[in-house]
Length: 473
Image (cartoon, rainbow, N blue to C red):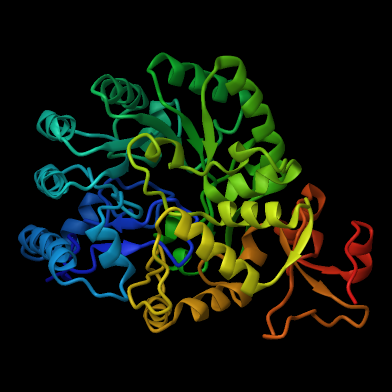
């Protein structure tokens, strides 16, 4: 007898992305633990044969899933926890992102998906979805007949059906996905195209990208958004062994590198490529956006103070079409800090970052209580880390992310640097937190993101910073 595997999530379906999410959507909804699409590059993938071999007595309990979903919403409405981000989000009907880790329209579970859409509609939740296909007429009809605002992205990672059959076996063909984009937009549901992960041998080539963008315009896609592939740490542990190191054939191998810790995007090389993509998209008059880390790092070449467009993050354009309740992003907070400092390059402390975050949040009526116990990491891979987050205060959470590789680490993922003195000591403030310097530089970024260049910790010297007009007492 095989080991029992619950396909449906029966608890903790709702989570929040993090203390200061990089995604501008506050609530994540996961209906399923696994995904039947079997995409080779995805940590949520598991093929149908394997899941059925492991399952005993079916795929878990859809009824428990539905019950837990409804009870969580009603509890937030009737008896919310005053220290809970999640309860506040739900009570105030912030947009729901369904789903981040698995496809809510996964084939074989269309009946459950329809029930969930009916719940979102009944309780009045705007919601956003990303999918590789809607496989039944009944599910499509339910989606377009909803009265609550909704928007979505259809993931298209290749124009080749041969690639789809090999790497995304349970997804619609590329042509069928383009048709779905057209039908959803015709039905009044703002829908774009999601090119994530930007990985394989056909993308990224400018010829193929131009074909994609041309087709996107033909079907009326509201935007085309791009994202990199990163396999790191805990993610690697749950990706099927034979998919861990996908063959990165040229030209994709120019933009990624593999080491024993994972698969990483080479952001400096991608930045140059995306400059070309932006030129093509402007000529075609197709709107483009980038996944949060790509957006932050690609834009390091040019950070004009008055260019709000530089801070557009994946999903935000489409969410703006139906909901004013957008969660602030790190880009927004850094932008506000920079305006206050009135400088392209500036020094700031964790305390300044926290205070700016609070003010930005208050401007858009976003709650940041000093104590909360419902924070989860967006990828709930490390259970010990998720448990630790639940015990942290707001300040503790930010300091943890400031100092260590947790959540969204400014020193790891952004054009933000630590500083060392002539003796090699880190400069810290009165709280013992490293001082941070915002300094956009594609050359520095290349050294920071590519281990081959020997710079892995993102630390600059006080002597180096003098060249940029920054001096320390």
